[in-house]
Length: 195
Image (cartoon, rainbow, N blue to C red; front, side):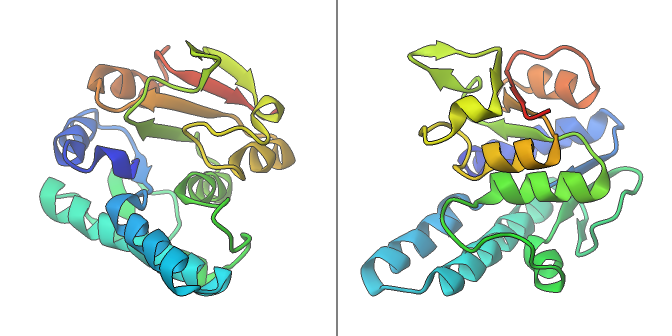
C-alpha cells in the first residue's frame, strides 16, 4: 500500500477487507519516510541508519492504517487467513537480507515479503502503472526498468529477476482495479515480468 495513498488508504483497505481475500498489507513509507530522506540529506546520516529509520517509518504508516481501517497488525511474516498489516521493522530486524540504500524502499521490501510467503506481489499506488515514454505499459520486462525513474524503486527490477517473480502495479485510487487484482481477475495496470 503506497504511501502516496495515505488520505484514501483507510477507505481502500475497508473495501479490500470486504473482498474476503487473504491479504498481507505491506505499508509504504510515504510522508514518514520523506522526513527520514530530509534528515538524511541535511544531516549526513549513514545509509545504515537511514535504512532502519525508513523501515521504522513504514511501521508508522502501518499503525496509521490499522487505526484508521480497523485492520490488525502483525509482526510475523506468515501466511494466514484474512487481511493483516505487517510491521516491517519487526520482521527485517530478525532477518536482514536486503541492502541498506535508498534504492531499496517498500517496493523491494514487499517483494522480499511476497517471496518469503510465496504470495503474489501487487503494488497499490496513485498512478495507473509504469509509464515509459509517456505511455502506460500493460506489461514490461523487469530488465527494461534498470536505471529508469518509475513508480517502483530502483532495486525492484533486479530483485524480481533474481527470484523469478512478477509484480503487478495498479492504481489503488480506482478501487475496483485493486479488488480485481487481489481476486486474481484481469486488472488495468502494469505487469512487471521478472520470470
